[in-house]
Image (cartoon, rainbow, N blue to C red; front, side):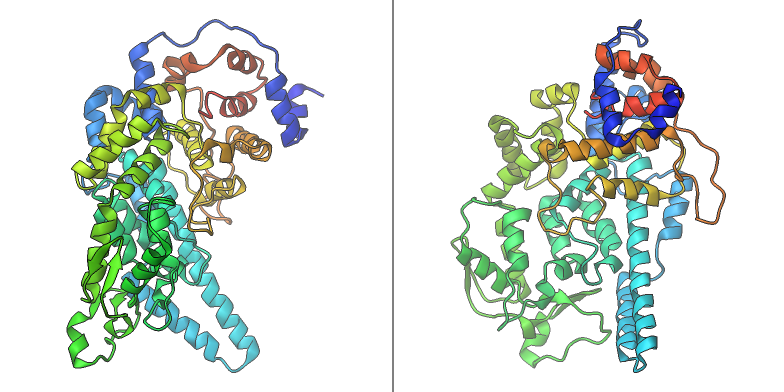
Length: 513
């Protein structure tokens, strides 16, 4: 049996062994020795979801600094390719979020009211199916934007903040609102001011439902959101706040919730002016624990929703928040243990600019530590691994079936919107380098490298469009090949088919960094 046939039968573990045990060879150099091109490639790969021929050409034409400014300040438009914009528009549900959630709530109530058990079960199943379809559409839109938007840094940062302000698609009816959460609370503020991002996430029903603040009311305090707001979203563990601060913040947040009713709540005359409604968001003063509070040593007067605004001001401008955010950004782009001097520099920029995220990133991208990390390659988490493979393999050609991509991410342990705990997916490389993870990663590399894998099959009943991953493209021959070490070059030289070569390249240490 020839080697190509044998490899088709090998299990994932044996495939890893083939890669690691292959003899070394030193073929003639393919790529030109171009230090500037290598530097461009390193920057592109570090800042975006992965280099592609088209994105490399754009950076080279603009120049590094102009390209980086464009990434840091992309404006409000998306400039998506026409086919991508059309598919996202097709996936976009009709009506406002308020109308959609109100319809889902009505559907759930009608199902629960069914007297006949069989009909009730069928109605409840239909309700769950509709919610699942809404969640799936949100996942597909996120994948398409990540792969094809020219504003790549904004999408990298959208994922970063989404992971930090995590919500789980499997809780309650979060499936109905998670897409809107990304589109209205995260992405518009991903490169803006941290205080605005914090407020947008606080007022979104996906967050309020996920962390139970919709149930937080005077007389039945729920601390879940208050704790995560301090522990995860802003200051960080061990930064000086106490359990008493969590309790005070939870009291401040009472009444911050959700309402899908068209009519406002009935309130006493003195409370009516404190009511705040915006879409599904509602601050209901009848549910608020009025009275003075003290947060982080700062007295807060009893003023309804104004207390929440004051608390966000305190948290977003706290020195611990500046350090915590700076460290997280440095970890995301530089490495697992960023230098303390770099963290302090980023924190200082965060404080000086009042939480201007783009300014902090500008400081980071011009730091010597970033240049070293970009040249060496930050080990890719599963999302970055899969996205970078697809961007390189298919460039501007638009995939038609993002469900395949989500299935790979789920198998690798980083499916979009599937982290059930508030901490989000880990940033540290060690979380993604275990033996089981690597075996699965090699299997996914083989699937991506062997053919279209239903990526170009728009629907189960439709015919798949002809396609094949083109990893040996002009970017590979002009720049990428020059990044490969002798061992990897030797392994690739022994590939027996294009599919074999693709799988080995995607499984190489150089591509995974």
